[in-house]
Image 1 (cartoon, rainbow, N blue to C red):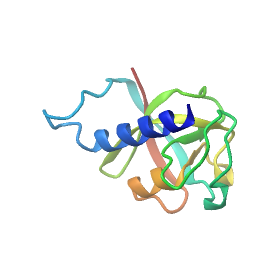
Image 2: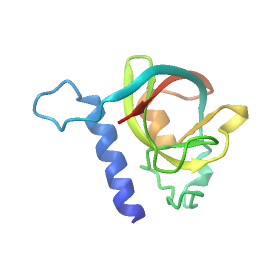
Image 3: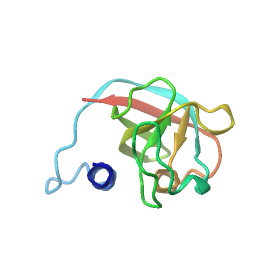
Length: 124
């Protein structure tokens, strides 16, 4: 199950970078407005652990931890000129009192190395 979820996350993240391409998969529509929240990368030493949502964290795992949204919720997270479709894969606040904890792979794909303000929106 976790391997399938990981494969889906990676696929969604890659696909979101090419969302304007007519040859790529159709991504779910964004629902409502963009919101802002503080986010920071999760510690790399969490690799190999399993989140409260049952996802094993690997080097390439893409997702977020959030204290409010339910496990499996699909959201768009954006920073700079990048928007990525991802899933809630963990619970609890992010590092240093931020709302979102980003897996290292997701943080890297967005160019985030420290706590920053990101935009986010629900996905259908």
